[in-house]
Image (cartoon, rainbow, N blue to C red):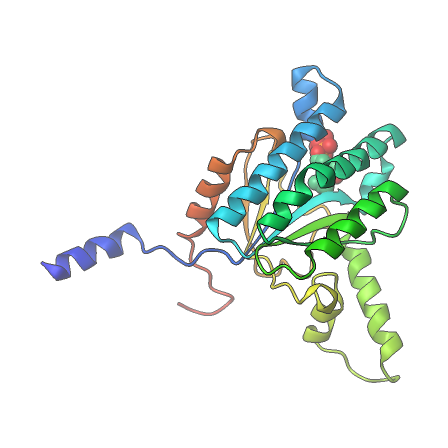
Length: 249
Ligand code: IPE
Ligand code: IPE
Ligand code: MG
């Protein structure tokens, strides 16, 4: 009898562990607005609400690290009106959400060069958020902002070159530690799972080094329509996957 039950559980496929680090490429705000026939900024606004709900959900599910791609180094190519609007939304997000983030013991990190080109009021909001959540020990919420992975790697390698003696060899661990996800933000583990919404299936310069063995999940849902239930079902599907890391099973 016991043997039969064990066999049945085995057939259903045992659940693998929860992902420690989930990263999300929040894409599709523009198409959502277009479909609704509303200004693009309303799409970004609705996208911010979707993000707030996913942060809550990730925290409730006990995920340790959540990273969101909010603004890439390539997104500066967009109109100044759109870019300005995105940063105004960031300021609004901090105003309305910082208190809850603190109550939830969430630690916020920014991945990306947040001192460069970003409007002053947004920089002030970021500084306040980082300072007031720095010591928190709950969910680590990383916002990739003015982030580009190639620029991140170049910056990291240059940092290493300036610290080392000529001719000294650098290791994979050195490069990992030199990235935004490295020493300066408490050595965030590589993402177990990267989710991209809106039907696009590419990385768009996101976490290129860190994604070496990440699992991927793509959904056609546009980011503003992405609900906590779908996030949960993607995590459940991830937990059925066999990760091999090049080893033979
Ligand atoms: C993602 O939505 C948000 C940012 C890149 C800032 P998009 O604005 O890229 O939406 P689509 O891809 O045009 O639909
Ligand atoms: C990636 O989305 C960046 C963010 C989600 C912030 P994009 O919309 O900028 O990417 P591409 O241009 O479709 O590759
Ligand atoms: Mg897009």
